[in-house]
Image 1 (tube, rainbow, N blue to C red):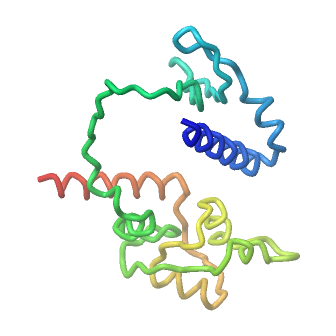
Image 2 (cartoon, rainbow, N blue to C red):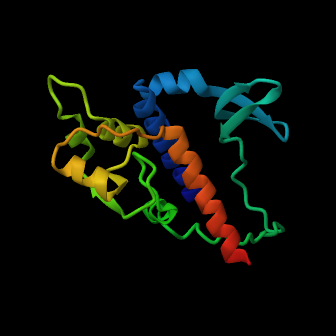
Amino acid sequence: MFHLKELKWIMEISLTKTLAAKYKLPVVKVYEKHGTTLMVQGKKYKVLQASVPREGKSPLVATWGGIPLKRNMKATLEERPSRLYDNQTELVQRLLAEFCELCGSEKDVEVHHVRAMRKLHEYPGRSKPEWVKRMIALRRKTLILCKRCHEAIEHGLPITWTLITLKEVKARRKARMTTILESRMQ
């Protein structure tokens, strides 16, 4: 049982440090903001809990902790079939969507790659190009581009054609992956 408690502690520290980095807060502030106590089976547990209010619906609540770490020899394991595209990396899924994440073109897609995210922040004295802003927003070192956008980026040329929004990129990718999943199930 000691190993489970140690694992829980490591995972909790990882979670709080990730949240602290994301919101640019000290770890202590994350505990102050999201720390609470929860009653589970008549026993109090210290947990981390975040709530997101929604219009006309009950709020979304995410909780970390509140699970008793006791052995249950009578527990039954429920096996769930995995989804077909879960074993593919996000990059492969983005490539399978087959469209440019800047302009939306579906011809000749290829991958643009930077060595490090810090390279994206090296535009002193001038505004960042739209492709840099997109990579920062996606928090990825890769961007799926059509040949025209890729050549413009590689040669430092301005992109003068219309670009699609980040919301549209995510919606198109999700729709494409749903289509691929449905075709594989048939």
